[in-house]
Length: 288
Image (cartoon, rainbow, N blue to C red; front, side, top):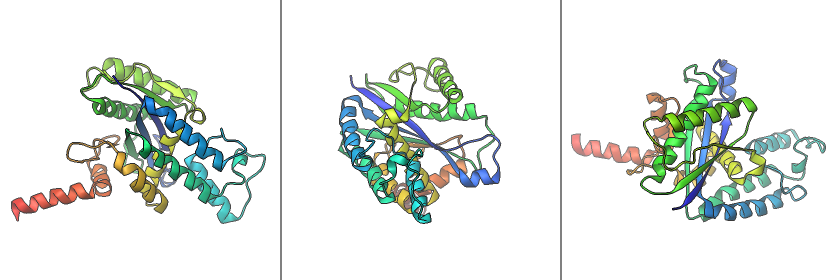
């Protein structure tokens, strides 16, 4: 029996009542889940600690978030200095290039592990129905739980799930949703691999959550067409996404929430060009 750790974090925002301005600022709400073997967690933690100390040597335990990259970029573009007494003071000697390199090396560390899988769930705020926030969070959690259960498949392995603690209200929603899904079931009648309780942790205390933040962030950048997001996603994330037997990503490693055929087609065009080429070639061979 192998023990696994799964770490989940989010990027973007979601509201039931969404203005045009909101959807322009937050076109997507994304949750990422990183699955690794528990016996490799210490190796990943030590690597992250060493990398972080090179970027923020005066406060090596401080958390560097994906959002910090673009805040640093904004400071540099405006030729402004970081407030030495502000929340980003630990990055006062860090450039955008330094932070980007740290993120890239952190994502690269996943490829030094013997096993790492990524599951992404995404809502398109421009077309998503007006679903209550608590219900949408539950739907994202349920999709991740189902994919984790299926990933571990016909094994006796177990998985402990950790997610970022955000606010008391959202934490309560997540805990209640997890309990309901786990005990009342869905199309998976019984969860055999996932531990029966959800662990809410602070991101600054968990390197797994921090990397999940980077994964969700660069997937958002990929979807929005940002060059650095595209490069990081294609270089470090695409190859460790969970896939189906035929190499399919959408529906296996990436799930739209809620189900939407048009958005799913858009995701396939972005994520599965090789699969699409094979399908088109097969159709041509059959129908000329």
